Image (cartoon, rainbow, N blue to C red; front, side, top):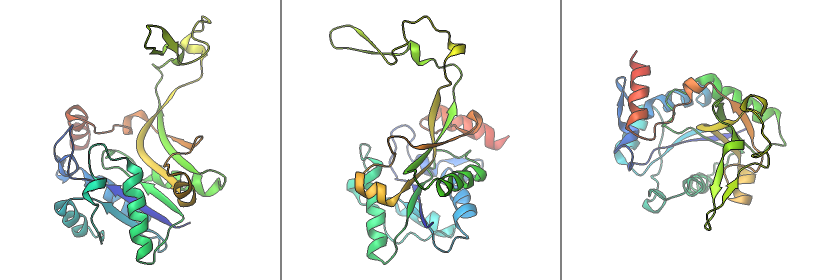
Length: 232
């Protein structure tokens, strides 16, 4: 199967300004995703690593690391509210115009610098061994969560239970484990993406990862946390 492995790295960020180039253990944050991509995808002749960015600085850094960036992401796909599907479709169309098409897309967000190489390898294996699956996500188990205690609030002041078992008196120990998407790896088949304009299927495959490598750098606290881990 051929893959377009996209590392999305726009220059803007509300939580941490310039986050993708923030220094972490002697390297920019994006470095760790580039290294994983090169180890997993670099030797596949049918696949390509691409950094989707609106930043000349990030483009130059990626090219210095051996990743060709033949075009930048347009500003209209690089705002705080721009959905990920927009830059993915943009990348696929640009490569198609250059004569390159891919059967699947892999997203490796720079905000998951602790993602191990073998997690991406295993995710690819799962997709290739399950041809009926349209997409894959990664997640970690959170043993503290019990969905039977979760509610939405209605406009007229009522609690709307997330599950029908909220008032059955069940114990957390007796309910099924809850898994939280960690954003470390996404894979989606191009045919499904183009047909539905979605990156995640209604029922995706899931690769369960360790909570310890599932840190997603969304703000200063997580950035501090990964710095402490990687500098140890």
